[in-house]
Image (cartoon, rainbow, N blue to C red; front, side, top):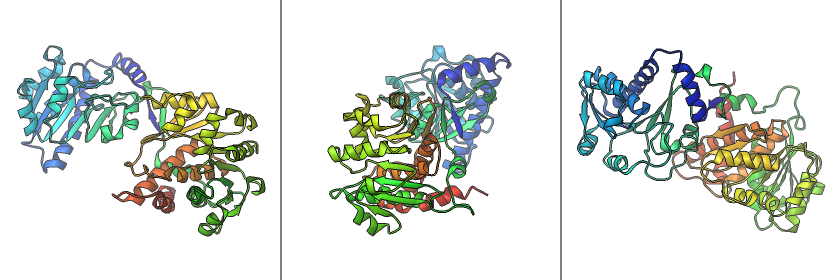
Length: 481
């Protein structure tokens, strides 16, 4: 798993490392890595490095220093470097001196637009991880003249480093080079960061356990259940799906279909859409009621079941079976409106809640807000459940404080019925015996990959995403020897 650390933890680790490292070594190490990536972007964008033009947007503090030192390194490759000092009186002294010695040009803010408009690459060294809030007016005005690719130093300026929130003018980078470790912004604000590159400066031994984690494809591959020589349909997990209705049969078809494609176990469907589900998925054992469904090892409940009396009774029955439950869509609304349904649940039985922002607000009484990680953690503690908070980036929080973040491949999942597919995937993994936190994270990973494969550059549908699930699992499993 990839570790992600908050800025407070990063600064503390940097202080410990700086105390045992000669002055300036870490900054020059970081800046050299930054210059390497800048040269690579110049080569990609223009076909060469020598003779190209780079403009540095330089704020106060260490991020500005990193940009200035990187500019000095680029001068060694015959790159024309100009630096716009947004706060000249607070510019990093050694970095500024190094750039001047190398022949770099210092440009006033007033003359900045003409240099920015000529640049082949712009380095964003405006603010660092200590800053909060949007860009100031002068910096935002300079960005309006940028037409070249932007390389952000550590993080795109104006984006909150711990939440990824954008409250006003901010940099949208083509690539972000960060140093020592990933910060929350890199997982939570992919559209602002662009491609992420990590430069090792020796910080890892000082960091300790990460605050957030992100699954690698290899993690998902290792966790995803596949049949072995001693398996049968029962040993691989039997999942029950209580979804859909006569009015909304599509939710049942999507959730059940995702469960079918997720593993090689058995899927039982219970609900008013039994005939429709049976018509789409003949391998599913479909009945009209949860009381007739038979034994399962996990339940998916909620998509399309309605929020009235019948839906409440279905949820109450499922929660009382003593098996893990993935409660999605209408089930989350029922829990919010009638929390007494949770009395049917054995406290030791795993529960996975999968709300989108509106459902989350119903569950918690307020929207997730800018800090979605803190919001998901709070909901996980309140309901003693794993909470998968849907959104552009999926946040999975466990009651013990563990958090997984799934960074998507574009926004292709923003389509009706996509969540039904996700719940079917998660339910099948619960039935296979995965830890609910890992099951939710692995399901989100494959779900987003399926969305990307189905879209292939054009909008897709939930049916398309479902159709790509097998290809997504196959791509993930290709990493297993």
